[in-house]
Length: 374
Ligand code: SAH
Image 1 (spheres, protein in one colour):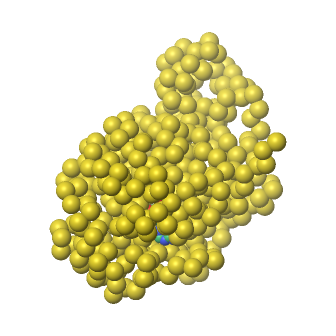
Image 2: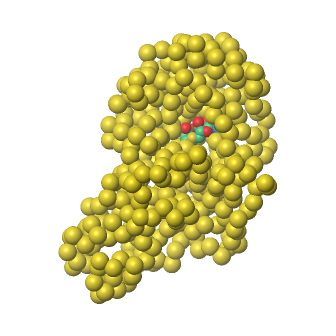
């Protein structure tokens, strides 16, 4: 089957922000904020809990569907509030059933979100920023400037759109297609920590979307100052984009390394709250032909991570238009994996998903540009 563009709207037809001027978007508010808004309108506080249930458990998109609220309350809410979700600019389905949405988020700008299905479950790959500031040389998003941080509404909204698409409302107890979340889309989540934390708090809340922290993985290129908070406050699984075993090479391909070199990064991993043998830290390692894929590199990797409860995820490099790197050969990847394995670490090779629609790791990009400052 060929990759298909399922639906495309003319980009110009999708409003940049929803026509919400003056009305409060209830999506993306914390419980406390929602309650403050609701009581500010003279409604009793317990209504906030009902509204929360309608938005995040039932997936309501309009106030009129909130039938446990009296009609006058629904009318008042429709006049003063909105439930703004991202609008779908386009949607593509890969031959391997990976789905990619280009979404225009309520806060402005376009981001990509990807769903990677497994047999009876699947992971949603969520973006945290429009563009990225980090300029990793092998990453497509890295060729985009950072346009802006996504708000909590923009981040939660990606999950809501995916749930709409797969009809997973009300929140199923088990047997979910959208069972896991990986913060591995566009952007560096630890450089937008507050909004990411707020959004994940909403997503984990057990009276709503209710995805457990054990099913959420946040990936960082190594923004050390926010790693401990991430473990303490959110308790999600951590993935670290290591990709090189010397500072010389990592400075070049993951320039954030110049600020937080390998030693500091690994010290933060050793101290990551909640990491243990049952909950290991994942080190991501992109396989770049002739750059970082030798047997000596594999041995050095094993030496570096010694003592950390870790697994290593080898990611075959995914090409994108204009890139100079190539993916390592299968045999080279297998040799690398063997060496790491023999040292006692699980080292699976990540099967590329959605390559045909540029939905695989490191292939995401949107046309959003930073507005000229005046
Ligand atoms: N900024 C975060 C989140 C992005 S996660 C981070 O760097 O961890 C995306 C993962 O895909 C990261 O491990 C990233 O390094 C990796 N990646 C980027 N470009 C890639 C490419 N072209 N092929 C394979 N993996 C890539």
